[in-house]
Length: 190
Image (cartoon, rainbow, N blue to C red; front, side):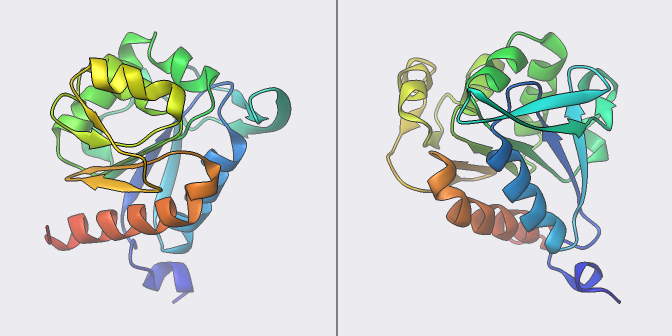
């Protein structure tokens, strides 16, 4: 067996929902971390083809092939969801009814959802932050509070099935927490 087949997330399927403007490091680093632990990942987006990632929102980075349009995806196909940031990525996602419905259904399924930086904008639009505690990039915090959520300024916050972080500097803690939460969800632990 390879290391991935023996990893803590072996057999788990994880959806990553992103579109043009996604912050590359917030897409790539969590992907590599959960894949190293044996998870199978699928990139969902608003359309098929490729998405354009960015560095610090303004510099073009890599392009990434989309596995499936979010409109064609079902929550039941996945064990967890990752929502990377970048400012334009979640802004586009929160304007798409299929993306918003997928995120809403995912959070309500109680399956793990990892969200970083500006990613919580999609959670706000999906109406799933009321009564929840999150962290995010500073400019998103008022939106979370206005939607009924509580914001704390920590590198990673876990509130039941939601794992959130503030920015790329928090990626090591974010990736470790996502792995723990997904592994615990798969083992039946709470």
